Length: 545
Image 1 (cartoon, helix red, strand yellow):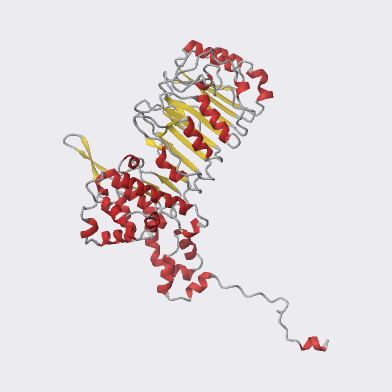
Image 2 (tube, helix red, strand yellow):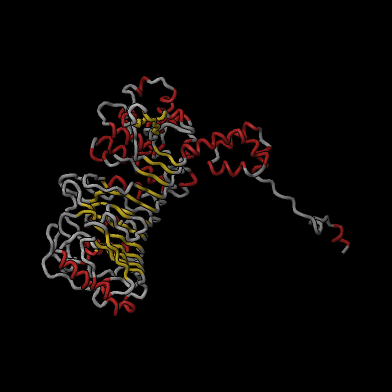
């Protein structure tokens, strides 16, 4: 006992409190102000705000940086090209109202950028610009020629901004890793031999290497045009895009600041038109980034034809493993190409697709049964919401869909009734091809035997007449034959059903007297332009998306 009492006491008194550990902000406050400011300058926008809010002293130390931080947040967080603002005045003599552009200098907190080249110059002058950009829209350029550099820019420019831009390009690790000729790239941006939209694509590709914090992106309007012109530049751009995908998918890519590593949403406007065509091939680098969870495009073509030659070749073995939503409006996708795409997106839960025949007659025909059979094969276990319709189809629609039981998780189906109108021919039959409609009597399979038992919501739309109004009405009625009697057994979860049709149809009395709990919507006019069937706002040209 005496021995133990002689030992030095190394514990703590009962009731004493442990000393609090020093926070990071405490150690920062011990540094000289100049060094503290430099450290704050390396913080991301979110970290900068968090550090300043840790204590009064830290806020005071960084308060001088707050105005610039707020300005950068406002100007670049959701970036898009400058659209000239309009001012108006009334001419009292004539009574006419005139409009004029408001100079950017007179608009508060406006940073006038109307081309990717100008944004590159801003980044070259202030590299911190890139970390503020969370979403970026390349869709609109107010001045196409703003992307043109002086022809002697690379060798004779004396402007400080151009010197910095030249240094930014030459020191790009992406261009170096891609093995491209940097001098050729620089010269092409100012060469008479290249078109304006090609120079824009070169500038946009450079910007894609400088976006570590971007979550959402809208590709440029001419993004796919470079794949058709200039093989030298074509190869160089693809080489850089491949490096972007590789670095963005590396382990700890987000922590290391890899460009586009945080990208989640790829979104193009859902505006469809017969003469609007985009090569789906050009959008695949975005799809191949693992962090992407939503992909939306319109007018994309993934089918070879002898006229537009927008063929699709799978450049990447896999697409984003986190991709959950695909929206494709007014697109043309071949059967083989659809298999390639969906086999690389096995975790998709929402698919909205509409087909539109394109100039010049690309996608003349559309095979509902083939499309749905392929979709069931690759997405049958995961898909929860499916929307399928035709914006415009000048040719055949193929055989009738007779089974959707390959969908094991489908809860919501929005589809044109035309998918179930056609000859009762097996989709894989060798007697049917895309170039002709199959022969034979109309299928008589009812919806109660077609739909999967997991379905909760069904929205049907009666589109353009395929077989004549009277025959089509008879077929629609036959789709619901035996529906009421077998519904509880075969479709136990189905509670919401709507049927929408043009006003040119007579009131579907037989349906109303035969069905229960079915919402019937009459559309104004003879077309679907005013479709209102509650498809979560996803309507394009009156069709489901």
